[in-house]
Image (cartoon, rainbow, N blue to C red):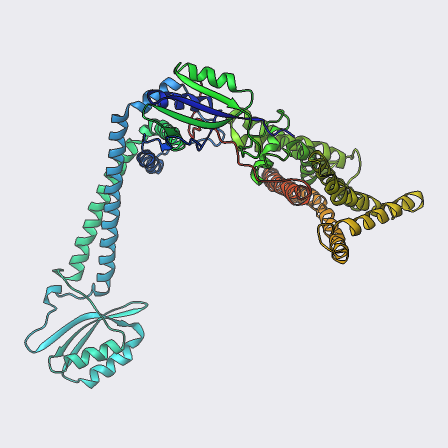
Length: 633
């Protein structure tokens, strides 16, 4: 249970050394910078503007996103981040003029492509609007009103043909209507009406959903106009191809831009850190937190930048909040990911990493429960750890899967499952003895719940809260241990009876102690005793260990059976091998993910609810967090 001991750092130095000191602290990655609590001269640093750095970083990300669309090179999912030296990193970042020119060219090409695509979309829309009139063989500019007539070009609903005939009969001799083309949803027409009845005729057409075509500046027949527009599309496509060729030629500039993105990301972190500092005319003050034991290393790093500074390290004051860092031995470190995904512990609480590790290890293996799968999971995880050289959360998750694979190998051998084939079990076969497997899972769950209560009792005792430890934790342990003993008979049943009576009586008499009045205290105790149903529900939740373990084996056997049915002819063995490999890969992936999630759930709900207290702020030191590269020195 290792929550790192923290030290409060206070640093005062000259303004001219500020950037150098922040860069040095960032390279060390050991100082969590906090908002300064300086009473005198509470003036914030007015250095670099975060908005400017954010804008620069945004432009670089946009440029990379644009180039990614034209990068045809194949990338391996298992390729590690390339290494880069600090000198090369800074050299490329400081050569701003060349990269600015590249970003400017990318932005220009992107804007040109956007304009060309928009232009093409507009042309396509214009062609779509003209297509209903392609059979109109007169120039569009000829569709105009005369002294005695009015002309209309447009479309009506395709089902309005009969209604159109009635309208024409109504104005016999005063209108002339020509049907041009019929599509699924419309009927295009050209109509000429005498000026005297034109308004009434137009209203009748609108009653059958007439939509008039806007001729605007079009000249020539619709067919000629469409051909001209299609030529414009061809010209636009050629211009787009040329722009895309220019974009593809710039793909080689991705690597410098990726370095630049990492540089400005670290720059942004440092600039944001400046907002937490305070300054006078010639000095600045930095306050933060470090893990105890790093004092000399940090001061040595500061001395490499300047000898003119004041530094102080102290323990946290009483009730002073400080960030929480988890420090565990290498074997337990991967399981910190389970804690970090939930919530950091209260600074005055406990690090549950070592408390969850053995149970998580067991539960993961029980749920995947195939020895062959365990070998694959461990080898694949170790390979990815060596190949990718990951850091942070991903590294920890791979560590969990690697150790979970070992547990899976053990449980698979105990159960006799090897890639879905039943081999002699070292213990028992859950397929043939399901009740034994279910009782085992519930028994482990029972131990897990009792362990959580016991840890809660120990925590209360350490804080001097003896009444809470005995009445709220130990009495429940006594009751929960006594109840199952009643089922065995004999001496065990007698002992279980006494334990159950002690537990029930104790809970009834003490769990309402915070309430006023004897009756209210008793009612509170009785209400607390009702919580036995919650503990029963907690224990039953561990049946998922049995269900998922059984599902893994059944699915594996199904894939083996399907593959076996295809054997016989030579080509059948090819399909059988494909089904075997793909099926088991799918089964490993799905069940490993399920085991990971369900193991976390059992920790968070059934286990942490008994003792774990959250509330800590994560320890996030100012550091070089690179996305594309890893620094080699």
